[in-house]
Image (cartoon, rainbow, N blue to C red; front, side, top):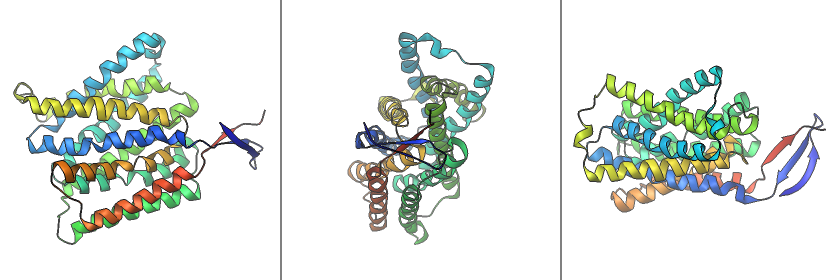
Length: 318
């Protein structure tokens, strides 16, 4: 639905959608992602090799998407040599960061600490939007990203107060994961805007090539001796992370990127923090500290701010 039209300084028409339903897929994705942190922490407590989790996750995500594309349009499997190289590189960075790096950090940090450090990615995405997707963040997006960073900072203060030591290795993996998530959002938005790679094709090949990256990394590091010893409870958590949190969550997120910018999507998806903290308090008996609650309030304010502002898309003047 179009609310009104106006022209910018270049004579382009700005269409402004007045439907807040555009944000619902992003919000739903954030809620589903929020269930993965407690699940990942549970796997860490069960001494599960996180590279095994990442490897199985890429397989369990790739197969349903491949079936969907096969039934919908087989041409979506076709990519050029240039696209092949691009997708292999992007898969190595994003899958290693989001799938492996995030869960590595859970081995050293609490769920709350991991999730708030990870959510430095909205600010990274806002900066990248101006460079990659040519969508400079608005003043509201910048302010909302700043609110998110403040919320992250307030939450992380407990580590500086001695209540939790910020493990340097866990911090490194978490920051790497945040960078990968920002890149993933920007690539999804760029695909929706320009179709340099069709969005379903991008989504599939990022996961598919991720299988080989995880295969290579795991073979060179921890090996495969743990795979036959996986217990049923570990497999249940892996299935949840792969099919519910990842496959359904990222599908909704990519759907949302068709209507909203990467910067806005990154901020709205911060609902993941609230979900993860709530579930951790209930299931893992790790209630949030007062600083985490205050930080969560800042994040909710950021989500309300960008959700309340109508998203504009630019259409060249005919």
